[in-house]
Length: 184
Image 1 (cartoon, rainbow, N blue to C red):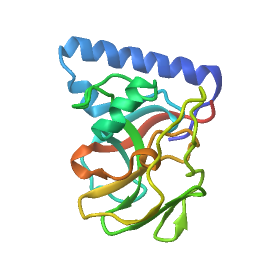
Image 2: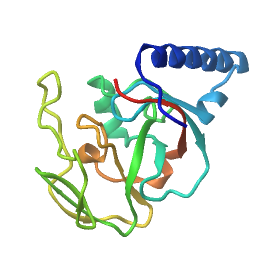
Image 3: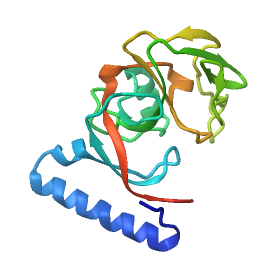
Image 4: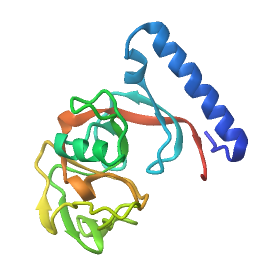
């Protein structure tokens, strides 16, 4: 599906988000939240994503709960919203950059997966408000069979560059864009 742009795109997303919220309230549970993810963040394209079951492969978009320590830090600093993860944070929408067996190299220049440097993957030392952000330690790592590396090419993405690999049990599901909007 093509991307919409401009003010019309925002109106359409607002309408879809309103309908999804009404449906969730009508259902009286979070069932809808388990099948639909609406993204308003800068980390991934603005829009509506269908959450479903699929193999967790590199380049797949997933909905995942950050590790508890990262979630608490993200909540405290406004990087994450309140949500359905065990930590109390909302799940994040990210690409799977690597799966178990992949080699991850972390340094100030950024992240490399099996020798391939990921675009815009360097971690910031300070957030947009000038506060220190802990980042994952420099080094070379081999992901365990049950681990994935979460990533977004957005420079300010709260992802594995800050909290490291995530075990597969943190993955809520794969996500496919249904209606996304280009540009901000």
